[in-house]
Length: 280
Ligand code: GUN
Image (cartoon, rainbow, N blue to C red; front, side, top):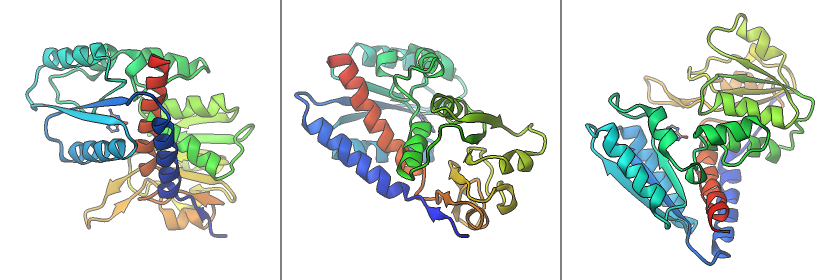
C-alpha cells in the first residue's frame, strides 16, 4: 500500500485562518513577544517567520534581540519587563540559549499565564495532570494533524520515539490524556525497530536523519515525523525514510510540509488562548 500524505501546510493554513478570525472578533489586539539572544541563523529564520505569521493573524508581535554575550541577569530583566507589560499576552524565549545562560532559570521566570511555549513547570504539571492549559506547540500541532487525519486515538498503541522536554515528553502526555497506550522509546531503548513495529501511531522526534526505516513501520499505522534534518547534499529530510515508511503506513507526514508548519500556527493559537485567559 502507499500511505496518504498528511498535508501540514494545508492544516496549518486553516488553523492560522481560524486564529485570525478569533482575533478579529476581539476588542483588543493580542501581543506576542519573542526574545532572541545571539545570532543563531536557524533561530533568526524561525523568529522572522513567527513575526510574519503573527502579523498576518492580527497579533501584535515584537522581537527583542539581545547580544550573544548577554548575561543571564540581563535576560531575566527582559523577561520581568515583559511579564509586567499588560500589552504582552505571550512570551517566547527562543532556544537554544548561549552557554552562559541557564535555560531552566529563564523558563521558570516567565509568567506561566504568558508561557506560550508551555515549558514552565506549572504548565508542564497541568499537562501531566490531565488538565492542560498552555501546551507545547509542536506536540499540540501533532495532535491537530492526527485529528485532521481522522485518527481515533483512544485505545491505540502509540509509540513516541524521543524524550525531549520540547516534544517527546509532552507528546506522550497528550497521547495518554487522549487514552492511548503509550510507550516512550529513545536512544537507549533495546531493539527500537521491534518497539516501533508494535505501534499503531508512531510519533518520531529522534533528531536523526532517516533513522526509522520502512521495515520498522507496521502495516496500516499512522506515522508522524517531527524531525527536520539537512543532509550534506542540502536536502531536508525527516527522522523517517519517508518513501520506505509510506510503503507500509496508512498515513504519514512529509518533511518538509508536515509537522513543521503546525508549530507556528499553534503558537498563534496559544497566544490567543493566553490572551483570553488573562483578559477575559
Ligand atoms: N527552539 C526550537 N523549537 C523551539 C520551541 O518550540 N520554542 C522555543 N522557545 N525555542 C525553540
